[in-house]
View 1 (cartoon, rainbow, N blue to C red):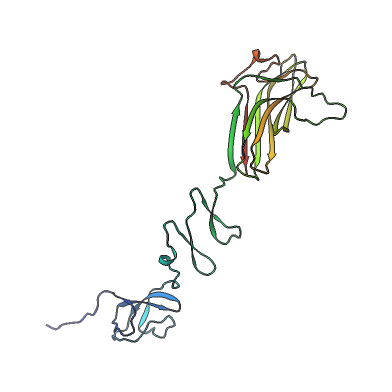
View 2: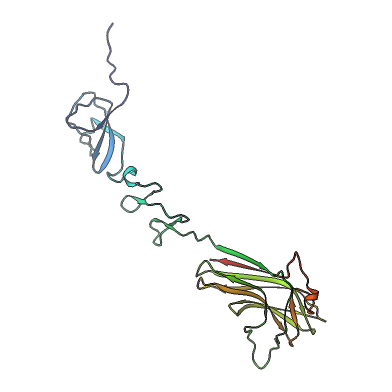
Amino acid sequence: MATIDLGKIAFVNKGTYNNSTTYEKNDLVQFTDGGLLSTYLYIDSTAQSGQAPSSSGTAGSRWVYFAKGGAAGTDVGTTLTTQGDILYRDGSGLQRLPKGAAGEVLKINSGATAPEWGADEGGKVKQVVVASNTSGVTSSSHDMTQGSGTYAVGNIGAAHISVSFTPLSSSSKLIISASALQGTGGNGQGYAGIFVDNVCRGIVSANGYANDASGISLNAYYNNTNTNAKTIQFRTCGSWGGHQNTLGTRRAAGGSRATSYDGQYGNMQILEVE
């Protein structure tokens, strides 16, 4: 019976190209040309040596690209060297970004040209602190009567809730809200305020009649410039005419009329945002 030579029926990887080796059809070699390390397939039916692959096409009748590679020295295997590395491309080629420290997140640098690791800033809301008064009422008889051209609210009143608050950012904003029942003596007008480091940042008033008043709530805004601890207080600031103004009850007549809800006589929330 006649024998028919079918030749190679599968690709054979011959490794790195050697100019003295004779190659046959369907041989594969790895060869660097034009700065690219690629795999070539020998397609000529005549076995030959001394015919190097070429990306310029001079040996295109014998070799074709089987797998075109990247620039020598910038492949993934030589660029990434340590567990946790990240690969990215800059203006010239592949680059390695070493892994960041614990708790850091991946960001884009200030020039918007490359990734980098940085602190997790936690988005717009940085922290929320909630505080309550659970001990009873707070009274002040400071005279808030406005006259003689003096209308500014100074460092006055008595703290119903006081919190030591440390900002997480030196450029954040504090949004503060507070509420409580309020009673005002002498058919007067009672005042309550929010103070940051003894400076009033928000104030509101409620009318009283025969020592009664109502619930009171207010909001304040503080433009933060550092991360120093700050004392934030919800205060009763007295009343018009110097009558007793009390937080924690709808009557002005002291602790015997304290009015709680779920054990609280007032509350305050502090929201830090970027």
